[in-house]
Length: 502
Image (spheres, rainbow, N blue to C red):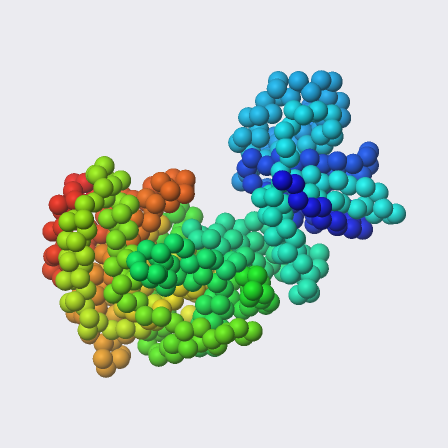
């Protein structure tokens, strides 16, 4: 079915460029976008704006394909720009390889009426007509693509309603979650747009609760808002929230920077990891209320990282990694033994220290800000799933960074830097920290092995598989701790040995 149209008044070329950005942020591989209008209506200007927005390059040379018929761009989404004004016969589209273009990328087509029915159904159609000194754009399309464009228009309206008229938008690579991000540029200032509409809880996993509910995953932006404000109020560098539309899941955030924890060669910079360990010690050295206010919404209550959550996450190892590694599905008996082994281990750490757990405290989620001083050098950007649990969990996340190879020596120095910063506290217990670190690292790495295989097999994201050898090696490091003996014996039966990890 075709939806629309949405009518958009374009006062000038600048407005046409902004429309191109809005289309680009809604674009997906496989989309065919038909650009209609008379000569001089602005079709090429719009196409050029779409291509430059996808490229993230305002100066990219985008010549008109009037004589070549097609220009292709290998970008984040491959873009093929067709101008069919001089097309002699619609059958020539077959010679151009139109079907292949539409299969592997997005296709922008000027003068689509000259193609007859060879284009098939367009994902979006943008018609440009002269209106006085400006233009009127009418956008229609198939239900799915039109819904995407409608969402992009809502973001544009959100920006304009919050004083960001004429803001330029660019795609920003996000995380493995449902959240999407953009860079927003207004008058030379950069902000971050988070687009995270409220998510359904998902199908029931046990009883009436879904996986997300059991493991306490954030399903709206409310927890992010609550934690961002709480962190900033306590002197830590979290993004300032410039504007929010909680019902739509839209947040406009301070841009904390792009500084990395890695050297230009891709190696971990030790001092940055050590400073992150000291920051974590500071986070754990103060009390955190469970009830956090949310401006414009109901208060957020931080949940416990309870036994059910930890076991459900660890079970991803059994559900996804074990079949991947062995070719066999786990039996009911194997599942029962898995639970028994993990319960025996978790029983031994019940007396461990509890505090704030940001949950994904590792290098991709910490911005290094060289020009700042003290802990302000470390910008925290991912904390919406925070809860109250073992303080060793985030230390394990940092010292065994899932996406960066941390040598054993550096791992030990990260833990030592944290311990040294904590030892001024009378209740700090180093032996207990080492024990809890081993257990939390084993639980986290078991979970991540399962998640990365699931992302490959279920969501078609093979990039995560390349991290498996590193995660296996991390897991093997901590399985040697005596507290993990029940789990280590069981994992060995699954073929999880040093030889297998190598």
